[in-house]
Image (cartoon, rainbow, N blue to C red; front, side):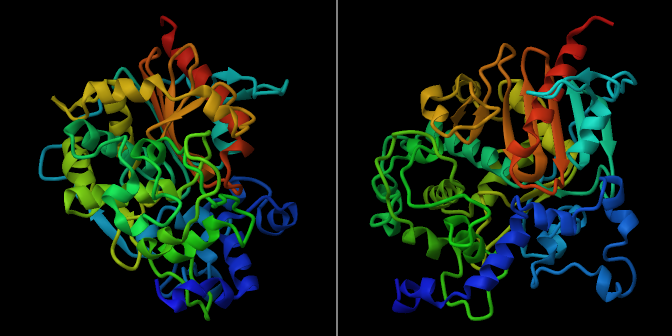
Length: 448
């Protein structure tokens, strides 16, 4: 690593980076939210607000990457559905096969399903919950049929939306497939595959520890801290624009070796997005192809997807495995249904059933408990999936601002949702989402 890169921390404009981070993740500051958040989801509707309308759009209606405005609420309600127009992306091809049908069997009773949010006494309907989390689109599959589908704002069935960390579950599943193939050894160290990381905190971690996020790293995922690792990673990977005088790492490959070890690997679960970036590097290294191309070949092109997906890329063209996928709602549902059906969909076994069983079994709940999630006390984390260990065996892929693939095997249900909540962390609205999913599951299990 060059002296120039080694000294990058001292070269950054701290105030500029802090502004970018606040814009990027809209932290939790009540002052910031009061300044930027309209009174209701209806008032922040991106179509009504007229973002990017006109030829050209007037200055006050423009959304740009360079100034960070694309991550400022309420502009996010437009930009999350237009990311490939704002930042570099690569195609994740659907292949040339026919589209796999998702039969329609719409139900009129689901919007009125009632539930009580966690740790509260007031009641709320499914329809109200969608508004409360600033939903952009939601779809419910029951026994493989679409029983509910709703779009708002600028979204429709053909519009891709940024899935954020739902992306992690795709690459975690893909890594498990390479383990099953014998191309990755889950007990081998990262350094044995990627010598460039030998001196980093990842060097003596195992593939399994990276997959399950039980690595011990000097890296913070605190979205409110301009000095946190997530802020520096965001700039290096291109998730956020760099300050004008920035001289630090310009790609994920350059940033990851700078992360130091802190503690002992395997001591517990800590959510860190850079683990997934290392997975993307592993997949590319052992396959000799970009990780997103492997994703296309092994999973996406076999789903019978309606559309190609896109993935945000850094300056080297590497897909951002931690959270860069952009895809349509129905295609995300196809992946969820594949996992519900133990890896079999579109007339073929896409993902080995043993891998789905491994994911569903989950990880150590004692490891996960150390993370202290308020509403996820019984959960565990396995292979980049969140496992509920509830009576229905539900498991899910999650992304900030409200993205979800929620799979309930007992209810034979899959829920997929895109959202643009003003707050990044799902903990801010998990009290609504989790009981809402459960209430829908229980309704679907009732005999008509």
